[in-house]
Amino acid sequence: MANSQYTARKSVADIVAGGEGSHTLPKSLGAFSITAIGVGAIIGAGIFVLTGTAAAQYAGPGIMMSFILAGFACAFVGLCYAELAALIPVSGSSYTYTYATLGELAAWIIGWDLVLEYAMGAATVAVGWSGYLGSLLSQFGINLPAHLMHSPGSVTLKDGSTITALFNLPAALIIMALTVLLIRGTKESASLNNVMVAIKLIVVVAFIGFGIAYVNQDNWTPFIPANTGEFGHFGWSGVLRGSSVVFFAFIGFDAVSTAAQEAKNPQRDMPIGILGSLIICTALYVAVAAVLTGLVPYTKLNVPDPIALGVDVIGKPWLSLLIKFGALAGLTTVILVLLYGQSRIFYTIANDGLLPKFFSQLHPKHGTPHKSQIFIGTICAIVAGLVPIHILGEMVSIGTLFAFILVCGAVIYLRKSEKETYRPFRVPGVPIIPVLGIIFCLVLMSALPGDTWLRLIVWLAIGLAIYFGYGQHHSVQRQRQLAKGAKR
Image 1 (cartoon, one colour):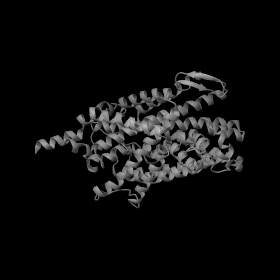
Image 2 (cartoon, one colour; image 1 turned 90 degrees about the horizontal axis):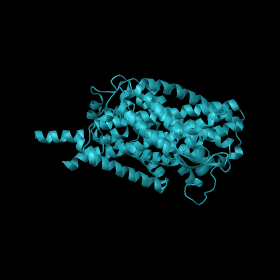
Image 3 (tube, rainbow, N blue to C red; image 1 turned 180 degrees about the horizontal axis):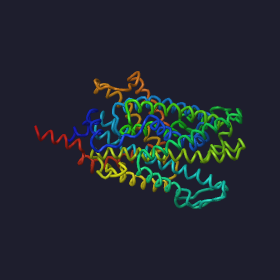
Image 4 (cartoon, rainbow, N blue to C red; image 1 turned 60 degrees about the vertical axis):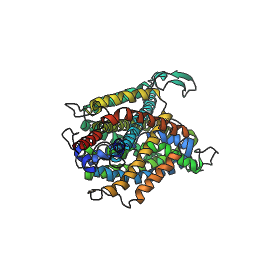
């Protein structure tokens, strides 16, 4: 009995029924809002922060190829997400899908891994948000205390001076502010998200439209700089490494899947939201990368605000100001969506008994998992204030890719185990498409450094300790198994 518990699956019918019980999240999201949630999550750190870093350190102008490679990988995985989100329209993302395929223990592992993807992702983007805020305020003559703008340690400022930083206060404050907004309700948060998504799309299109006329094609030569001899730095291996580094910016369609239980018509809205946001954002990523590397030599792009640097070449101060405002809006929506997604995943895990009920309690007025949201917001704020962005970013990337692999596997498994179940959206070419998704993700994971793999192993070990210490003893699935055994 004990061993079977770890591999015991929840049927699709049981998962859907559980998600449609009496204590459900309100259905308030349409296809447009769901697509906007995806665009809100995808367009942010990838364009406004990581594009320059990846070009300067890894791929050069070949960063365009890095985004295309990441987009291909996401296309295969996104199709799998679309089928699963429409088939199993409940909160929980890949945690829920894994429970339906590999069983409870594997579901817990992936649920714990998703903390890297969502909570740590929110902290990562908040650090980038802090950098753009400081840059924007400086244009108005307002200089925030430098020791409260960076994670603890020695920091070299743009003027060459060195200071000892204490805490990244703006990063922590934006997380807490958005946490309060999310507690007030999904509909209100989605409305703000829609407005901010519109703003940053206008900004991105403006950068492409104005910048293309100032592109110096000589900056694209060599398109892929020669390999320096160190894996991951230029050459085709650099393109691959660049793709793996920026990949975490593509988790938007994963965040969309967490909204399935709150979709008005999940069978129609979820595939539209997932695939629509992915197509829009991949095209914009490649266009921005092309313009940026055409405006500024890639060797000069290793800065926290590369788009603003590119605008300076255009020589329009008003556009520079607009870009920084747009970057703040873009990064804000990413943090909002990631904090939202993390609370919904904890909500689902707690309903399965693997986390305390504290995480699934809904606010009596707003209908949101408020206690969970406060807990997550507090932890993320502390992490954003204390941990450097490069460590956070790599952890998010490997956690995301690991989750995507299991999602692709879930499609293959459920096509066999749930043959007769109606699928509003079906992945074409199964098992070829899911297998390609798995292969792409494994290739990108292989490009990440060894210390990132070590952090993933340590993180998963902590998760297993929590499961065996608490989760398995409070599992709703286990209690059902014991009840069935007693009746026999």
